[in-house]
Length: 476
Ligand code: SAH
Image (cartoon, rainbow, N blue to C red; front, side, top):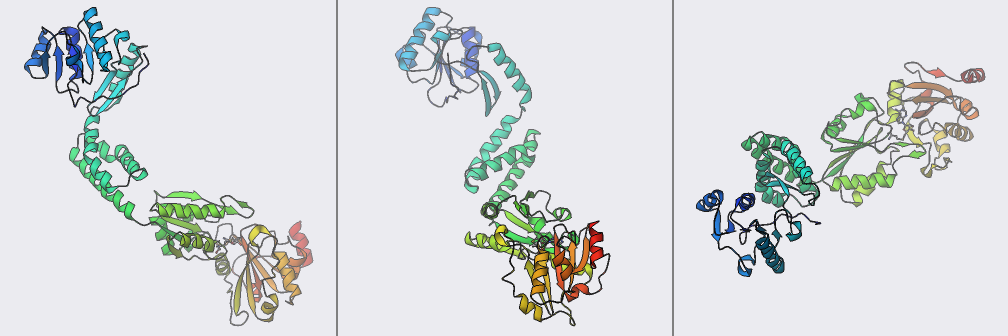
């Protein structure tokens, strides 16, 4: 018999057991696990049935039941132990569409009785389609050991809170997550340990928290992580990391910086290295919007300052278009950090009155022409140029500066990994750099500072690549 498991309600007419013997008593006892009353059709009862009848749990009805006694029953068990009578009852029940079971006579049954693990509200029914009843018994024994005896209390308690949770939390994922956290958490533990009042107050608190979180508007903080040294984080950046539900961070963000994030925060790298965009910008924008819409506090952590060559502007546009609350937390940009480390001022009363931050890398990954830079104008004054993403294009800039009329000995100083333990500095001038593009031996990330200030005395170790021989030496 192929069967489908369901749980039958006994709220209407009581189930009927036909027969007054031992077998009928066993089946009656089984039904009484859920039925308040079982009607038993027999002329005489064994003592157990008589006792149940005296207790009001069994109601005796006439033996030899016909159509009227069977109609409308949730189910019938024919257990008279008289083959002819059981067959007759089964035939009437089937004709009426009433589910019927005759013990050990599968051909007379329309349903099978499962092996049951009973924890009140939590009931496990095991069936093997009569193929392996012993296996079903083994499974039942195993589940009896595994399922906590107070599981029923826990289910009842959850049942009591169901209405309130439905009122306070939206259907779907939020409600499901809430219940998962209850059953996996301290509330369930307390209940299974028998501490009902603690469990109640924990569930109450969890409902409050979950509904507050649901009402909370999500937001995105575009946070500058500085050049790498966590000491260069702003207090606002640290505070943002402490409240973040999720942090999307760039490759350039230092490891020590991430250690300030809240322990429970999800940390998601969306690292971008030149030429290897691991997560496309449009996808990052979509992720930020999605998380904020789900009510989360999202930190978008970017190296240096979020608005200096960090595509922060694009993220800002996407968030504004989606009506998401935004906060910008500025950071120490790499050029400023490099200058501080060198103890070289980017502007100086005597030598430089302006400073220009330039990208050595154009959108779309093309080799930059620097046409948008008015180098002539810059050449006429005392200016400082700070070039980002210029490791491979620094020499082109040096060439353009020479063409624009800058003096050939104009100093250049490059700082690799500014503020990090592996910081490295190399000084040269534009004519050497223009003629020997690889002379500085730079690796990304590095900034190049072009201008008279780059020739001012610098603190710390500076490699110098100036004369031709030294260039050769640097290659050797
Ligand atoms: N928003 C960042 C810049 C992102 S563009 C900022 O404000 O600093 C990436 C470029 O920044 C790198 O190619 C490099 O030129 C520069 N950069 C970032 N961190 C650096 C560091 N620690 N030292 C030197 N240059 C760095």
